[in-house]
Amino acid sequence: MATKISVAVMHCTKKEPERVIDRGLSVSETMYVNPTEYATPPETKVNLDSKITAAANAQALVKDGGKFEKANRDTLVAELFALLENTFLPYVNGLYKGDRSKLMLSGFPVSDDPAPHSVPAAPVIKSIEKGPEPHSAKIILAKTTSPLSTKRERLTYFVWMGLGEEEAELKNVLTVTNRHKLIITGLTRGKEYVFTVSCRNAAGGGELATKVRYIAT
Image (cartoon, rainbow, N blue to C red):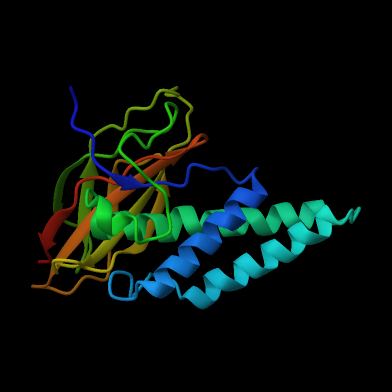
């Protein structure tokens, strides 16, 4: 039986505006009162709060019967959802994957069985080696399996990088589609970095890859 690991999850979709807005409020408010655990999110809370306010205002107009507000509401909710799923969620899991008590201080729900059946499996980093350009690295991934897997399936990979510290802040440094060799540039020779990768398909995002450390050459 596979070991289950606690991770923070979205457990809502961008087609559920009220849940997305509630999730944004939960993350914003909970990170605010837990600055020790979540002191340096990869994007400022000002940006998150701005998107929450815009989405909530648009949702209020729709509920009041505004005829021309739904499309604008849907756009704003999609932007908020993308910020939560692609930036804040990987940030939280990158810091505290497996530590349920820490994860619960993020404002995201926590699950031991987080992935809907159709999302990709967590990517596997086979190796990291010197890249083709100066001050670069090449991340080589194993082929990602997915319950939706077809020859034409679109798989998007997000590479997250931080300095090689115990609880490094991870930032999205590369986003590519349908590639298994990922080139990261702009590294400093002799510095240690930590990398992880996430993957998403049409159904949503899966779990993060196990972190791998790399000393730039």
